[in-house]
Length: 526
Ligand code: 1PR
Image 1 (cartoon, helix red, strand yellow):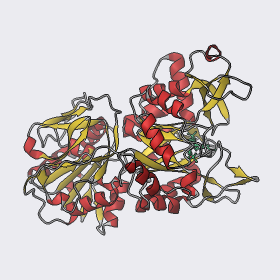
Image 2 (cartoon, rainbow, N blue to C red):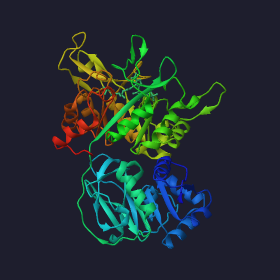
Image 3 (cartoon, protein in one colour):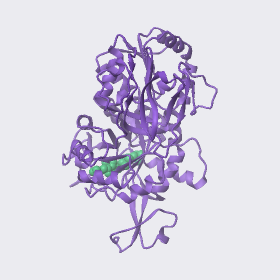
Image 4 (cartoon, helix red, strand yellow):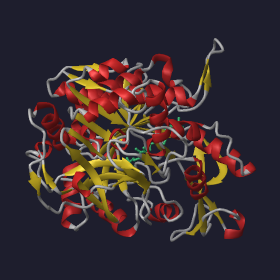
């Protein structure tokens, strides 16, 4: 029997699903005594360090956890669950008490690379441990964090990982261990590691080693635009420049849950669901997307992002739901990240107009509770043509290689809301910068002009946004063949590339994309 410490934030469903998939039953901690009675304890932590430590203190879990750890009983901390074992974090300026089992602190990445460190990275193994039995030293695991450990005692280091510099990515002392990466999101190799923790009778490390692992891979993401078709069934659809109808009917390209499973099996590094009519249908009303997430997360052990309809909402009975309520439901149902589209434009416009952060916007609230790595901004820009840069003062303007519809020589990337139906006087670069300042952790950069065209990614747009922010950017819209992926990674600094149509129509497989990238010497997870 595995005991899971769920302090109520982040996606613990994935860990539950992974443990159950491995054939074990699981008990959730609901009282401090449950900790002391555990045989093996897993503590998955995602999100915000301050929130986590506050909750552990409020629930009176600190003392029993300390007793459990001091007795050298089996403990596995994941991400924040490992960071909690140390004495404190740069993220937390309050007087809250951490577990302090290991000496050392948690510090923010100091690098010019994108922070959060997000994606599939390798491990350099420093100790032989039953936890890593059967794990190929060339494996990559899924990381998502802005802070990393700085232990005082080097003998507790189990693995390190390189992201600009080498940092500690897992620790072990006796039966107490933890990983910065997420085994429950790391596909088969992650399942192996979890199984090792659960099944090994003796977990003690057996000696020093020194292996060199892989570096961070570029991510290939499959995107599923989801909506109800005209018969009311939830389907994956795909448009051309956001028009998803063909002869008046919504195109049906498959069922969301089975398609997501197919992409996981084919090697997708992440799966993104966009509820494309979320702007008009309140997501918590009949909750079909929650069911999609619940079902998908039972079989898919890579990160899941969900977008559409994340905003404050008042229903016909006057009941008020905050964007945080909506996001919390999504996280509880198995999402690792939520993506905000229309609401982010409204929030950014208000912020840019006043220069004031209210602290109450969806971006700020959700990132405060779940961490900024969990908040993706989905941008839907459309080219706005102008004759001269002076016609678009204050915007990021591009000289066009082809003349515009009325012979214009320039364009800028105008933000839209409601699935491209409304435009705003705000450009995509300014939106991305404002959202980063408000607490977003990643940008999903679509382009309406390119969507569904198979003509390649919009490299000017991607460079404009990527060079203006320090958070990861996912290039999206326009992928038509394998070379478009190598082009976007060679000619921009995008951390990930997303496609929909070519995967749904089976024109190009995820494996073919990855084989091509590997041949071009671009790091990918195979
Ligand atoms: O505004 O917070 O409710 O979120 C709505 C979400 O739905 C946004 O993320 C928005 O991008 C998305 N959305 C709204 N309408 C559409 C539509 O297509 N009519 N889909 C839509 C956006 C764009 C990409 C697409 C890529 C790759 N889809 O996700 O998958 O362009 O396509 P390709 O590889 O086939 O070219 P809110």
